[in-house]
Image (cartoon, rainbow, N blue to C red; front, top):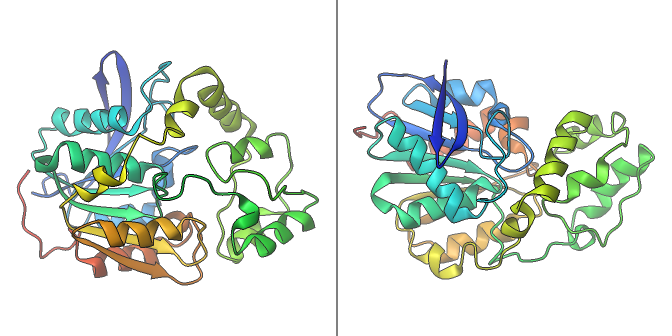
Length: 293
């Protein structure tokens, strides 16, 4: 696994190459918010790397990439993704994206259709379909909040289930919460003080929060222009499942799989189930697909 650095408009983007580095097919992996390339579980990377050279990178404001003051819209982040492909001379790629990264992937496919061969969307929320999500309105909120209550943490049902939610946990000891959450299929919150401090800086000292919440960042018409084969894989107990159904209805070549017992972060919590779902979708990450870099 080799490390790379790419610069776009004086913004440094860092990443790694994994998988079969001489494979004719290239996969681009785009993570979500409040994480980095470490989100991609080694077991998932090994499986995907059997047929592809994999490019994984930290999105701007995350990991070891720079945190510029602006440039966090899906359109700008899609340009970052394009810079990664250009720097590695990738003509067309199979793109896998999780959570917020899904909007970036869809925008990349819409703006640069010749550069994306297929899409795999893993539990992404798209704001044109789910503009507001209050945690108290989520059908699994009672079970989810019960785990926190056992750890002495109270959740306000009026909180918005968006990029600001991790900041609600800053300074709290969630060590008594994460194991029960994971066992019940939910995501395990990140409570590293260093990681949360960096994330707070991203949301408070850059345009990121405004960009992330923009209703015009990715529109329904944008989505309908995406023609590539698109595998939509969602957790059955994810609050973002309505986005999966909406994308399946609007994408001309979208197909939806629902993973029972899985929450939002299933690609990390259940890497083998995720691998099987991706292979079953047959959107691009199978040895039978032929492609050229």
